[in-house]
Image (cartoon, rainbow, N blue to C red; front, side, top):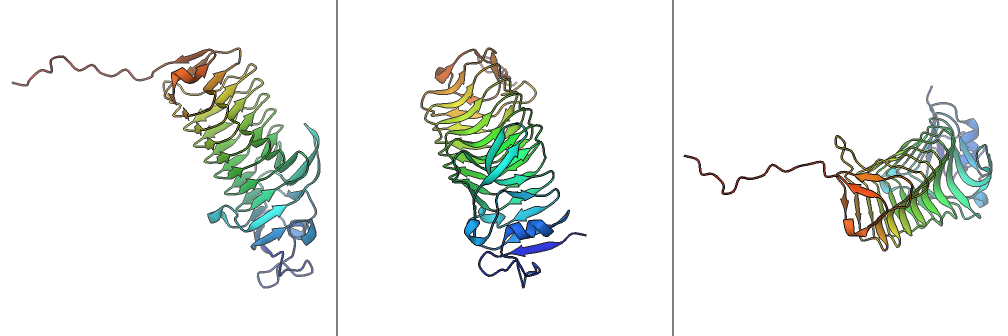
Length: 303
């Protein structure tokens, strides 16, 4: 049976039952008693080691932690870090670990530890939606192993290395996010093949960096005003940036060096994107998918 637990870092107590009238003080305590289909509702406030939290906070399968989704977690700050032993990347400094079908919604996450990650996703399929990730010392969200997350409508701002990093053989949907003022907006490596759709990426060092032999699909993203490149492709990576039957719809503009730089060993084919052909580098074919119907000259006058 689904249950609803309440947490208030100011007015709560971990000896309370976790009801709306008598909330817990810590997310840590709520996670201890949560079962499948539990929703943990957070009140405004700061959740950190000083308030009693023990990091990393591991959200079990089928459990949702939610703050205020309408304002992407403003006023609900979860700040802290603990050691997580990753099967694919060894020991990591992490705020949240999300297990399969866990959900994190409407909170602000900061990890000030050295190489700190806001959320770690290891071979699971959770949902991360309508949050703010800011001032993490590495990235907001890191997905690795066989991860298949939904990363939806989050704000990634001023994180040190990346907004989002997708590694190993991860997939997933990365949609409607904003990545601003960080190292790389989105970094995709190894053999990862996520779908990137409707993301806005600007004022980073580079917008999207695709390396290894990654095969992401990019549709309707905007990458602009980045210091270096809008999209950088290296190694043997081969992103899908448009096909005749499924136009790319990506907009790359006003980036400092190149809007699209292909330093990989593959030729990229761009179909249906808005890219200044004078601001590209490497092997790139612009294949216009639409051939306009010619107008007869002179235009015939009907009888």
